[in-house]
Length: 247
Image 1 (cartoon, rainbow, N blue to C red):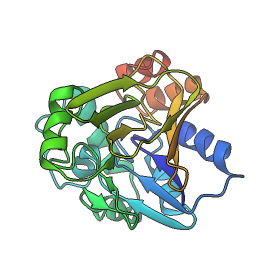
Image 2 (cartoon, rainbow, N blue to C red; image 1 turned 30 degrees about the vertical axis):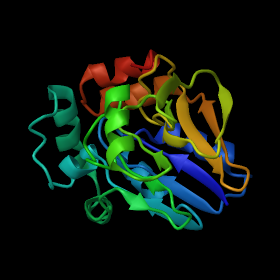
Image 3 (cartoon, one colour; image 1 turned 180 degrees about the horizontal axis):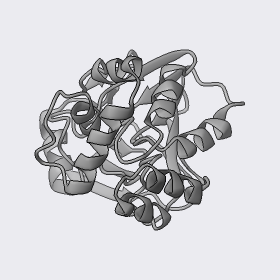
């Protein structure tokens, strides 16, 4: 099976469009969407409609910004810019798109081939998995051999092999991970709409389950256009500035 893996679009329609243009001639059996369709960016309707219209089999889950925008949580733990963007997004989504966001399933979800997708952690959808400590908790308490997760906006890999846990940040325009039998993996495709690894290009992954190969990819998009839309919408300037430096 061929999988396309998308995460953390955050209302950045220019970035998502660039990714979908890059993959439009490739054949995927399944698309996995790891949450946070909205929040931060000024193109939430375009992003939601693009995700709604993805062809073929699609597994989608919600993220923490999706929950706040949909009114499922109050955003008390959000910073000022994030909360302002969430409130703006709620006001600007169409009724149909707001309903779609509200109805996104809670992760984790086990897909038919037996691996797991989640937003933060399979133990808690809002947990950030940054360190070997969070990875150890998952490997200790969740039995899957392969988990794709988002939320941190950092393309990364945790590998549990024997008694050892290894972590790697996935750098560069593209790269390949070959999964080894007997090892367990936590894999983050990074963020399409707001990368935070000091690389401003949109980030996504593909997974060939037959060959046990994961590939990561970076795609440039018109950041200045996205910044202008954010500022024109009256959203906090910080949300535009950070896109240029990938933080």
